[in-house]
Image (cartoon, rainbow, N blue to C red; front, side, top):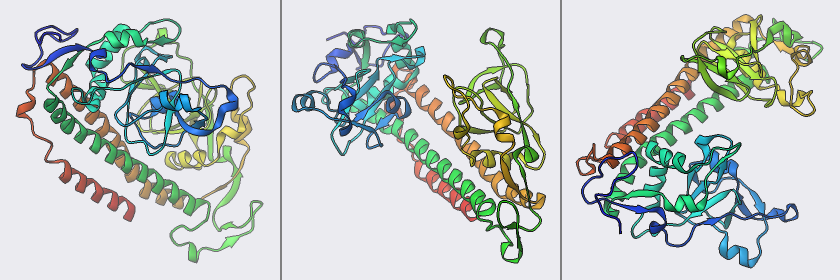
Length: 429
């Protein structure tokens, strides 16, 4: 057993009673790499955790997954169980190497693919939840970076993972820390659920008003013939370009980016920051090449890259309505690229659409804008909660904060009640 005084990388001194052990000393059995199966075995059998699930979910439980058929011997070796830690063996970026997820009470037999390492801890000495939080903390990420190879594809090996030296608090202390940190995750989960509810409400409102024409006062509004069928009187039929004009984004090589707070948007979202504003907010961005179909409402000044299309003119559409309109078009179906998916703005500018009256657009803004504001606030809350959670664990490990002087967040329930009330208010709008 290692001495409690033995230093850890990045940590000068551990709290009294804590020790340092190599990761392999905490295991109930050896680590195992996942399984590789040929294509003919896919599509049936057991669920399989792929890299997509590993990077999408911190807690892997009963999400929808692809399936693969395992034989009896494979079933003995390659299943996961509650409390298993899963690590990414490789990643396109250094930050993704060794990404850790925790398996939580899977309801059916589930396996994992060959790019993933499974670690099963001795739960009498090592809480899987505690070490999940450790590996997700700044300290854990620094430890992973110390063993990651930095070639074309960054990665870790099981051998190096086993040799990592990690803090080991008494098991009772591990459980107490987990109780505290899980409160942060509970609030994050609650906020995420509220974000999803707000998104569903706003999209449903768009469909009710502008697809099914059941907007406020629709009972008193006459429907008239048009080339797209019956539409409300006072509305018109036109092309997408009549409502808004899309423009290709701008070149900004990585070497030319300067330190700043202006978000840079690629086809899938924010990809960095810069010190120069290219487009004033609010704005709407969608993918032009590489990844198609995602539409993003941007509420701050930004720089759209050349892999995007952004709305240059809102002719007969507000930014909020333009976001929901473009989101409803299924833009990925207009791919005109062969090797690289590409969206040509000329292909969609001519799409026929129904253009609502300006008064109806303003009413839509009035109802949806508070929802988007609340959504942005919840996203910021989650970012702050994650930062606070990770910083707290680092302070506990360094001894800067004594876990015995902490109490489980007693404000958790009060905050949750307040947040549910806010959702109800949003639904009642």
